[in-house]
Length: 203
Image (cartoon, rainbow, N blue to C red; front, side, top):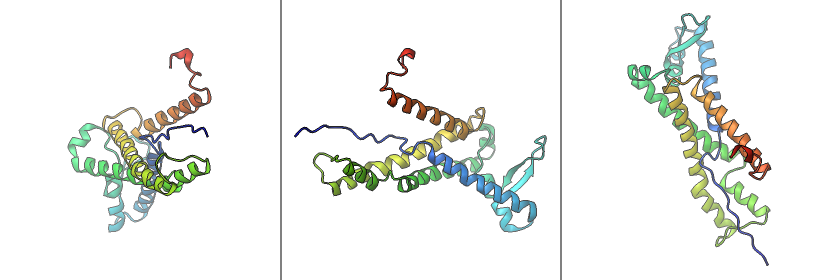
């Protein structure tokens, strides 16, 4: 019998940009609920803890969080603001890193890319890991996939924070999403053309 060896790549950004998408959706929902409640019950203690809002001067009536949970999970707009309110920066940093790490591990469980799912997919394709039984493969993947997912999610969160703190044009989240989506298209195109499709560009 002839055996063909192959590698199974476990990328650093195992869950791609999904963690930052889920984190952004969570924050957007908190903002929406907080803003609606604050407009109607601005004197309520619990509502003020969720978020206090103020109208932005020259912003056409738009509002921004100035206190409460909504304020602390909003990104500082510049390094000057980081220095002026370091507590805000620290809480935001911890929130982004923790949320992205959590959502990354959560996503592998619901998207069919967990260690158990990967093992089942390889078994269905008739592939095995040299020196391991099928049951043992799950424990091997458990050592790498959750770690790669969590670390990749936290790395994406850190990149977003850096862009936000540096006051980049546009939001850090928007820049990161644009770059990762473009790179995914590049990877897909490269695989479909066998890596030869961009040869004329020297890539």
